[in-house]
Amino acid sequence: MKLYPNIRQQTTLLLLAFLMLSVQGFAQTPFWSEDFADSVRFVAQWKNGGTNPGTEKWKWSKNADGIFENQPDFGSKTAANGFVLFNSDINGDNAHDVTVTSPAINCSGQNAVFLRFENQYAYFSAGATSKAEVGISTDSVNFTYIQVLTNVARNDLSQPVQIQVLELPAAANKPKVFIRFRWQGVYEYAWRIDDIGLFPSNPQAKYDLAVSNPLVNLNFATPKSQVDTTFLISTIENKGIQNQSNITLKIDMSSTNGQTFNLSDTLLTLNANTKDTLLFDDLYVPRDTGGYTVVFSVKSAQVDEDTTNNKWTSGFRITETLFSKDNGILASATQPQTVQGDLWEIGNLYDIVSNGYQAYEATFSVASNNNAHQGNTVSLLLYKINENNDPEFTDADLQIVGYGFHAFTNEPNFAVISTPLLDLNSNEQGVKLDKDESYILTIQYQPTMFVPYTANPYPYNAISTVVKNGSWFLGGFGDAVTAIMRMRIRPINVTSTKEPQLAESQLNVFPNPAIRDLRADLELQEVSELVEFRIVDVAGRTIATQQLENIQHGTFTFDVSNLQSGTYFLHARTAEGVKTKRFVVQK
Image (tube, rainbow, N blue to C red; front, top):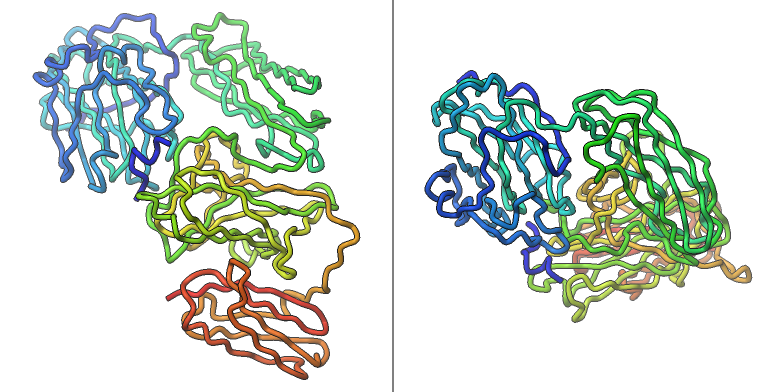
């Protein structure tokens, strides 16, 4: 399930070589080409096929506008005069295996054949559900397929064009060759294809360097009090078909507060169609609030044939109070393909490097079909990471230290909402943050709700957005999805006092989730004259209380059969201290 487009607004043939090309132009002349400038010719000569219970098919179009919210216009060379399109989103929740096949192409006299085509491809499904392929045949019946566009990330709507090159040795010197584009998927986004050409030799540039995937900070916005020494990572790729030498990567940082930084590094050689990743560590400390811009540029001893990809600009901000992974440029909204259970959870990780601060506010967003979120409530949870020796990341690696909630009224889709963060034990606004610890701030969505996100990535396995859907996944929905989940911090009032805390092992609740009864095991070091239990909902309302006298240990049962499905907290107050545990009621 995903948001509708209106919500996003607000045979023995061998395919030997598969190459990725990013240049916009090419010097060679194709011996056959198709730019889809004639809609009548497309209908007459290209054949729709495959299976699809939905209503869509491959169609001709000349509307190059982005189809989805904040998707760029189709960037093919001749998009303005027409292209072909399969809109899987309009096709609805239907499994499709659709093809579009060219007329016969004469490759006689061509000792080598290379296929080049331009795309704008985006998909929604996780795993291998969505598969884009190119098929080649010499009889229009038996096709051999190769998967293409495999480097496109799920939910990545940010690319204007993706250019592919395939070598087709089995097409050489054949009088009839048929090219087929095939898409298998279920309720994906869309695939646009244009500017198809067959060439007698590789149309890739000889010399084409590109810089990509910079990582300049672990957050887009970081409070000044939590700034650490900056590092920079970037990838240099030789997209050409010739090796290159004496390659220089130059980095220039500037800021709105006047701070600057510059460095460069050199690679002696970079082989054709290879990449190298460069890491620069312990560089500088951003000294004040403001915007920071980092420009990566690359050059070599050879003359580059495509200078459009020699430079990449990135940036980040230093703030007074705000942590943010997202850059504020909305891309779309998403959710798990299948929600496991009554809730799913998503959030961002933030590192604390200085003592004396507390998290006091969370900012998030929401979207849903037909405004299904309105009239419902969401819970927010602040976890402190306490990793154990288990290689799997589970709830056992997390300690809930704070929470929040929000009841939706008439908020529209993609509204940006702020809500207080409350200490788990005191229920007061402000959650103490410990130095050199990591925290995950999440929101629990119902299955009808989607998380709005931006497309600024955190590559190189940097943990940014995390998802819990039955189990935890630290990779989230991939680099192309950065959840809108921000956190504000402030200095702690040094005069404030906190009640002593029981150890984690002194209070345990089970089963969790609970259906009818919730049990609590309490183990105190000494007898407490008075023990008070309170069950509280995410809005801070007390649902039930129980007071017991002269208790040191025991198992206590609470009837939760009349509670609605959702998140609740069990507070225990004793003479030794207090402790709060979260539990879930599931019907």
